[in-house]
Image (cartoon, rainbow, N blue to C red; front, side, top):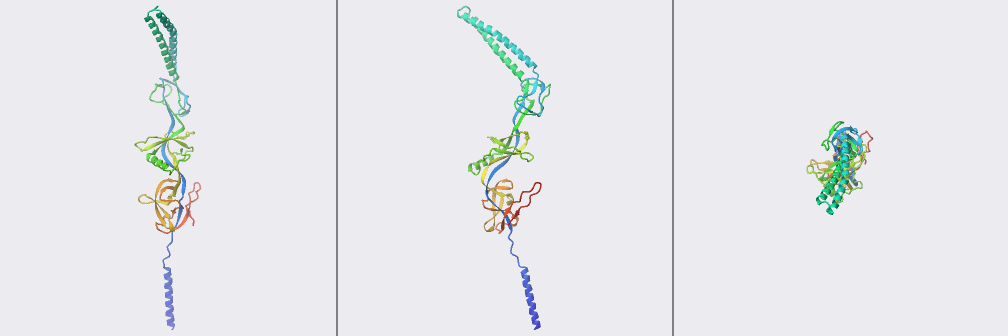
Length: 392
């Protein structure tokens, strides 16, 4: 009896141990992955585009002499600002002053001969009418009078020419602006309308910015405006500028016009903008990027860039939390980036829950536990931004 009790006890012990080990090796229930989602909403967005370009002067005057002469004085500092009408160079006026005096003397002589010729012509005409003199004498007297009047007119023209030459011995600035490098010094001989400029004056305030836009983008924008997907805002003509070092130019400009011709070699249209430049921070020839407002989309769909991936073919894909917290895959059509978000043309609708965190843990058709995405707070200056967190 003792042995039987011991055998039955041992069997019970072994059975209990086997049950315990079986419980320990049973597979646990699968864990449902957690993802953070962004609720997609339609938003009012101002769409802009960046266009490369260069600055050009508002006005340019290439200074050339209008008369021959020797440079007596240079009356400006190279690189300085000059006013319209200020004298830049003074040519030797002596020969032109003498020529003017000579022309005036010739005019006086011609004017002195005119009354006598006029009186003789009138008297001879009267005598010819009563046949006191021949008609030939009357014609000769009238011809002499006409020649005297022509001599006066010629002398007057000579005086005007001499006055013009003398008046152009001081070479003045036709516009206000900044001077460049002078090509001549005092004592140099210059000639009228020579091909080489003496100096160039450029008006820098305001200043032009010429940028190019592809004709395809221009057509696309026009169709979107005509279809009503976009509409022009109140400030659609205002333009911002980004400088070569990436900094923003503080003063806004405005779009002046679009060229009516497409450049055949590039397929681009030139846009000209005007910017105030009171401190002459913008100099001609600088490379800049103009931020131009295309229009306003009142129902734009924005998606965080971290929630958009690409397949091997480059197609944009996104995962959303669908009905029953099941993962669905969407193929997107992207328009452009605005900050850290994509403007989505198709593939998402308002109310969709776009997965932005936990993408690597899920696949289409899988069940997930979805929590709202919480954007990280802005980092203080000089510190990295903290990682985004999801809250249950």
